[in-house]
Image 1 (cartoon, rainbow, N blue to C red):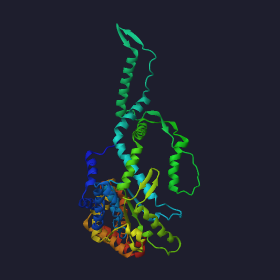
Image 2: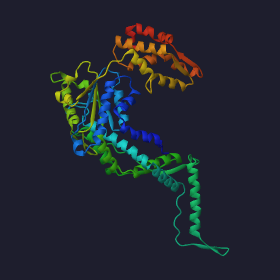
Image 3: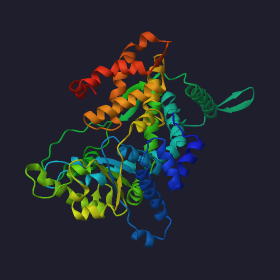
Image 4: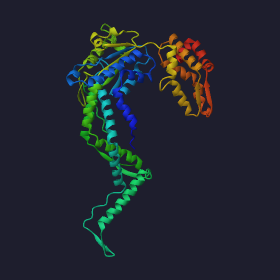
Length: 472
């Protein structure tokens, strides 16, 4: 059955496009602790996208996105800010790691696949929206098709058959149709009430298995995939086969088939490309891994090549995709990197110039760790409490326990590698190791984690630095 968003959720989704920068920061505050400078930068960038769309086409064409580089150690919220930004923006969003790409001529992913992947995401988003619009009609059509299978339509009579009953002339074909309609409506009622769900029916399903073909080509792997997807259905046709399934499964399958028939994919494609070109967002993570100039040895030589390949995408170019040509002039790029070894100035000057906004994220303090444990909507404390509640165990943390967890996380970060808030996940797993294991036997109990319990679980490990490097 189709699932619909409540009207309030639909209104909320529409309202997100009108959020002020202050409201955008407030939304990000629900999920990310601190880092106000980074939140302000992305809030202004997002608001400028909306401002640009209200300008005349001539002026809007001249306004280029102000791309952002977020600089800071791992685990301080760079990726989380980008993830939440994408949900707020209601825009096509793609997160990629810059280190996955290689210079043209090397084996690996081509940077143009960034745009191709972004278009695929936009296509899926628009298709989902269109599916909601046609869901009711698709369900009705599928219901009619399923009733036709359960009760095949009567063949049309060859001639009008009449009979006389008590001096009244009755048209036999009309009586037969009325009887058939009554039976059909009874079946419809039973179908809607779920009384026919377990009955088996036979329907035609489309075959999706294509013969395997090996083709050697100097073309990029992504382009090969694009071409084969387009070619194969045309070469082998759309074959169908009979398959038996339960009524409820058949109904779901027929709904999907009807939805695909009702959606105009050409319109979906046009809308998706327009969204990518005007409001697409790409989060380019680990950009520091490709920072470097010529003069290195071995594979590092290709780093500058990757930067030079990324440059035209960020600067504005036209990329060929299976859905047509896509311009990247107004896609917003948000890059992020720890820059422990390299510096932003190690990027080639042309690429530096395409990221005019630089934001430095701060390392997390012990107070930040305590806030991260409790404040965000999906904080770690809320997650673990909910997980153990499924076993019937009521879990509570004292404020002293939270302070101790934050203190241990901070100490381990200082004495080993600083991995930011991610250290809290490891510490929490270690603290709750015994409780998680014994939870099924503690059903109905209330467990309080206090400072003494945290110290008992962690002190010995933290004291032994060699051990803590492996365990925490």
